[in-house]
Length: 404
Ligand SMILES: C[S@@+](CC[C@H](N)C(=O)[O-])C[C@H]1O[C@@H](n2cnc3c(N)ncnc32)[C@H](O)[C@@H]1O
Image 1 (cartoon, rainbow, N blue to C red):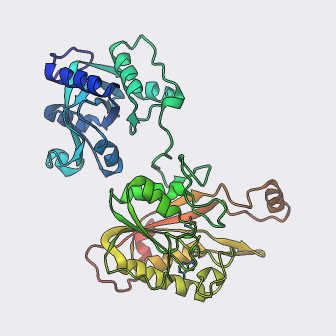
Image 2: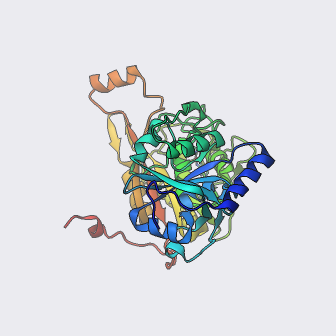
Image 3: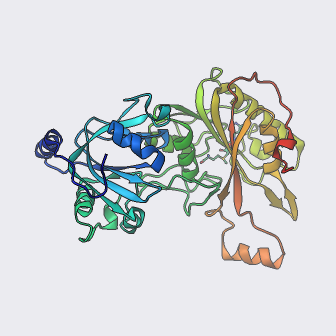
């Protein structure tokens, strides 16, 4: 197929679909940018099918027949357009395409002529257009016009670009300046020890699909519930001392769910007795992280998490170290060592701590005066339950982590 700024024969039917849609709805169709590589580009054109994996799958399901589509080759930095969606976005339209790697798909056709621009990423980022999100009708139209005439300017007010969601992280350092994101509150900033919502957002986007069941056995102010609600996941949340009516009172050491019932578990457990969550006698946050008892109780929670998680699915465990009264306790290392008895490691992520109470000038000056460090990060242990294993304790083979 000939591309690069070359007109391609008119597809009248596709044009008509666009016109009918615009007339009926009275507004311009939305737009979507698909990404491909030089390796996968050919199949896009041969099949006239665009596709992505489950991480961006939800965006594809929002595509309606007649929407404007663009294809960005990430290797050559070339944007092709404008295409029309010939079907609604759906899962597995052609299951065997790309050997099943990209199941969220849409059939496409040309809206008459096909154009391309090179150096596309710079053009898109200078206007704040993200290639994973949905483009509002006005923006999609402007981009389509710009492809036809790259000498004209692509005038898009940044406020028109939908950037409410945090980005999907691609490295093992996750840094977001605020606890909350988007237009609605997730969890409560007033809750001591509240989880940064973007951490849960990244976990559920990567490891679950729409409608999956996410479990939070220590839900605190309910951040997991709120993120799941916004992203279309089901959520069951427990806490020893519930702060709201959609959290069920329960001890995480005995979870009232059947074996293998959850698609993902997220847990931000106490890190010791540094924060007073509540005075419930079974609150593990009343036990010091300097004692073995603390890790024994958390291990009971891990065993329950292992039992209720579906094989092959993922647990995210957030935890920080402790430095209290001139003594350092490697809480993260000890918790990780225990998790390895049951789960395989997917990865370990460093979460930058931004909005904690000690992030004040007075604490920074104390850290210098008394020569200690404030906690600057937490660990996020991303662990997977093996598909083929019985829940017996495993010994960690540290050799697999050594460099020799
Ligand atoms: C770090 S907070 C969780 C924060 C929460 N993710 C949020 O965003 O608000 C830890 C929670 O563990 C709960 N907890 C402590 N011991 C527990 C237990 N035995 N069973 C269930 N929850 C427990 C505490 O009540 C506290 O709310």
